[in-house]
Length: 467
Ligand SMILES: Cc1cc2nc3c(=O)[nH]c(=O)nc-3n(C[C@H](O)[C@H](O)[C@H](O)COP(=O)(O)OP(=O)(O)OC[C@H]3O[C@@H](n4cnc5c(N)ncnc54)[C@H](O)[C@@H]3O)c2cc1C
Image (cartoon, rainbow, N blue to C red; front, side, top):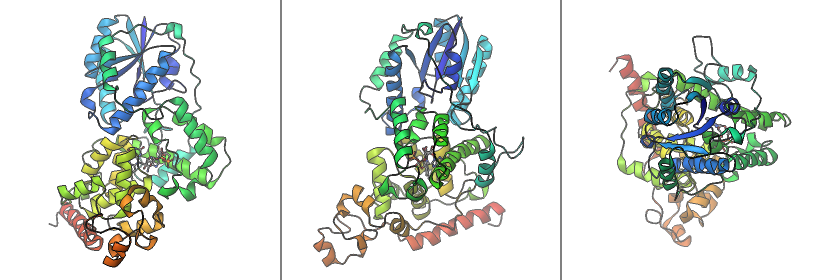
């Protein structure tokens, strides 16, 4: 009898719940299935994910083999069953939302038909959506009461997984798929991948930056956040490992604030479970009638970091150059796209999906719906970030701006947030012409703010049937 461990976004051995149970089986196949319909070829986000899969495959190759399959998931499962008729048990960590949840539902049907015993686990979050609820039939909508309940719940301990190489199939079942995968990842730039790198990142964050996390986390130039998001996305580190490591440290404001951020991750997963349509639909129905301008030129300027708002531009260039963006800047750029440029948040969400190496659908959609004021417990539509005052507050000397907007590197601090305020003489003096070497602001924030508020109010009135 044969068992299959089906990896997804849990690319690690240690503290992998499904693998912990699968590793006790006598004849075990380790599987990763790639669905080409699911990825955007060449997008930094998917390249980063495949770099992690490739690294995991290499790491496993020291003692075992990660079998790769390519194609539609149901066809792959069918092919595997035909190639391995003794297959009678499957182990995996389930997805609660989005594509993963629908794939798992379809797979369940296949397993039932084939009489394959399913062993599915919740592994990705400290608490799955069903574990922290207002009542057995009601999910939370507001973060603060959710957080209060979430804190009270006991968090699981990490599991020690011991693989038995002698029980794992080493011969390639589908060599053609392995070749296809090798081709796919041939030119993918490797990042600092793997469990070891992820654990080293955690250790260094705890040692250097945890204590002052609450004070430093909002300042992009300091770069004092953990950068664990991309490892959490691929599962190169387990959330329980992170949690238990935190519990070994002294109780500080920094630690409490960091733990709260981990709760936001669980919260947005739970919200996605309770609003499965949230990738396409605003959660708050009264904001379904906003008249977006969706100006293509503005969208391009935003993507390229050419809006004339230095911190917005620095942030968008950071995303393009590194595949990551600081949280404060995600909030500022998302607010700018939706409220200043009046571009539908769904375009921004999709762009981040392509670009972010830590792309996580629940957190990304949650973040975008928060910034666009359409989500649950989102920023109110009339509290619109002023991109200039945000810049003055969170990048006071413009150090971060200068890292990415090189054209502004030599201008004095007092003009760094609004370079268009320099006189012609001052521009000449500093070797830059605003409007030529760096753009003038593409919109007037004050006017756009008023317009955005009017559009949101119109949507509310329309929803109420008054228009
Ligand atoms: C518009 C927008 C889009 C976002 N898209 C994503 C995304 O695709 N993937 C993603 O992981 N996060 C996303 N976030 C949340 C947050 O910006 C990132 O998790 C964070 O910047 C990652 O960097 P870090 O690991 O250094 O974070 P840290 O500050 O070190 O936080 C630690 C961990 O807590 C979690 N976390 C922190 N803030 C949030 C948050 N607001 N929501 C949910 N989880 C959080 C993450 O898992 C993060 O790794 C988005 C936020 C916004 C406003």
